[in-house]
Structures are given as structure tokens and as C-alpha cells.
Length: 69
Image 1 (cartoon, rainbow, N blue to C red):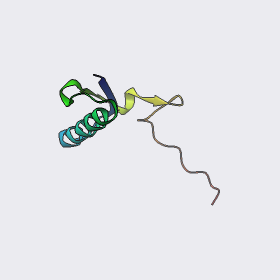
Image 2 (image 1 turned 45 degrees about the horizontal axis):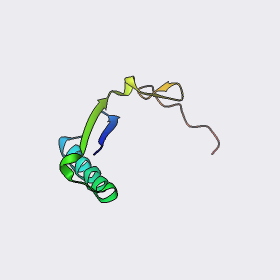
Image 3 (image 1 turned 60 degrees about the vertical axis):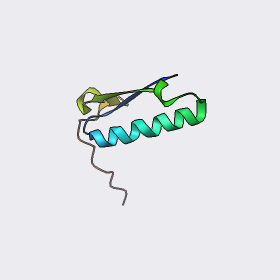
Image 4 (image 1 turned 120 degrees about the vertical axis):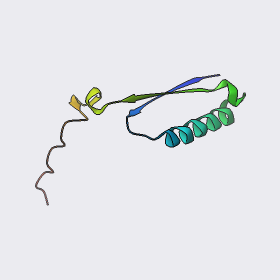
């Protein structure tokens, strides 16, 4: 069965991760079959300064909204 890698910004609680692990496991078994014991979920917490989208770090302040209003 699969190993599911989840990368997300740090700050989620253990309970949130527990619930997500269960939901991902349930969906995997429902979709692919097999046993829940065969599904591994790995969580990787990433600091905002270690993640960039479009060349901009998520830790950088957001630009001010444009004055189109």
C-alpha cells in the first residue's frame, strides 16, 4: 500500500494531524482497497521561510492591495 507524504506549514496541532491521517487512510482504503495498516502517512512541517511560491518566500510580507477600489 502507499506511503502518503504531507508537506504543510508548521503550526498544525497533533489533533489536526491525527484527523488528517485518519481521513487520508480512510480515503486510500476506500479508493484502492487493502487494509488501513498498509497505509503510511508522513508529515513534514515546513517553516514559512523555507517555502517559496512564484519566487517569493511565504514569510515575506504580502504586498499592499492595489488601489483599484
